[in-house]
Image (cartoon, rainbow, N blue to C red):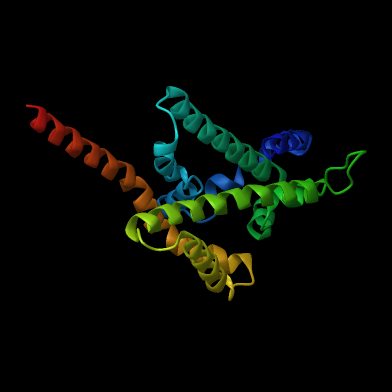
Length: 213
């Protein structure tokens, strides 16, 4: 439901000026490591596919779907960067919190007057799906660790805990700062979790070969 909204970015091409791209090459903060971590954090969540392996068939199409999904995300991010850097000036982009939402306010259609509200509503559904996926993975891990516990209480505890943790934050900038500290541990976990899984598979195959031999 959200993929089609990328088409709206193409409506900005008449307003994009190639000269606006030049200040970004030499201005701003230059920290490739920290900025690279921030860019990598946008793709976090791919590790959730590891928890779906017991529920999916052994088919190459699953791997193609994972790669295709991340290619779509890459295309969306590149499109957003292209429009944002070409539509706004350097100083404007430093103070605009949601450049794409603010840009959509300039689009006028004969059907919808405020198209950014519809787009934002659709992305709320996308966020809801993401939250449900993380809750489900937390439930799976907790059920493995505490086999005799009641699963509904786990779900209720997760929701209550996340609600209490986020209750003091009223601004997106505050939440973004907290995520900045949590990104690095999650990146380390997401990077080494597949490696750890491959190690366990290798150990299991090695043990089976010894038993059969």
